[in-house]
Length: 119
Image (tube, rainbow, N blue to C red; front, side, top):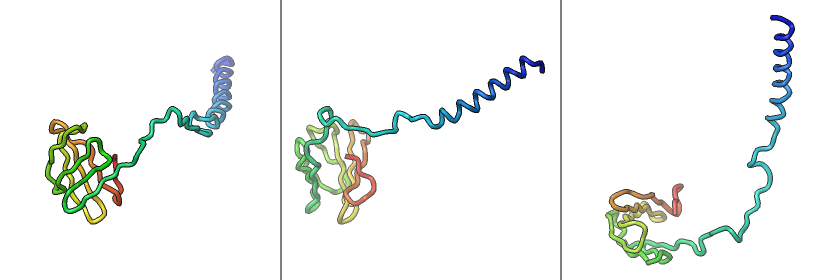
């Protein structure tokens, strides 16, 4: 190795040893304080209100309202983004629903005391 090659090698090594710590301590775009502009936020104006009583599932906050049997079978619904809904009671405090659109299964929902809830 001649002197020029050795000098270039040392210079590159020195640059790397100085630049790597600088890059590690730089802020990421996710650091700092995030502020929400509530004027631009589109939040749900009302909560979902549903119940299972006497083997019937009622969603009074849905538009249009849903009133189907909670027997685990596909029940036809109209005016929703899905064609059928299947509702079953998991236990005394939670239900599981499955929606289908043209035979394709949508998201499952279990609530309110289970870990998975996608509304």
